Image (cartoon, helix red, strand yellow):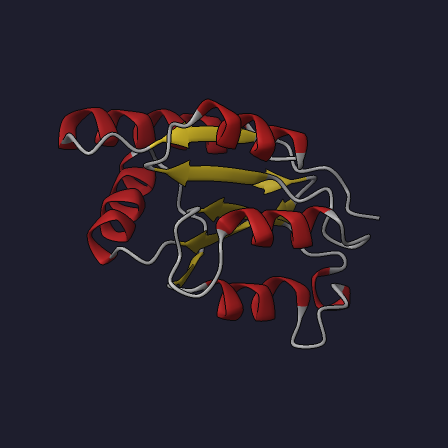
Length: 148
């Protein structure tokens, strides 16, 4: 998977180790071999995406695809989404929400803030695995726009 010939790094923000392993396994099973950088909390993920100074400059020119859980130990995924989408250097990065929350208002809020895809994690293994495999197919054809 690449954006205009550039390698896309998948940033996975997921605090549940079981879910994180399942997501990665199914992304690989779908034939996506991009680097996956995992984070278990929002602070470290934002340090990576926006830099410790939160300027976003560290991601200028990088091709990142963010997989974001909404329920994290230190902050809400909505806050992370808002920070990424309101930064000039990262606002065009695709963000895929992967969460167990299926509240209509929450889903709408994520789309309003700029989420590209919202996937509800079914707790039942097979349907979750299927949803992630579908996501893998999405990754294999996605084009990441230039961030500048």
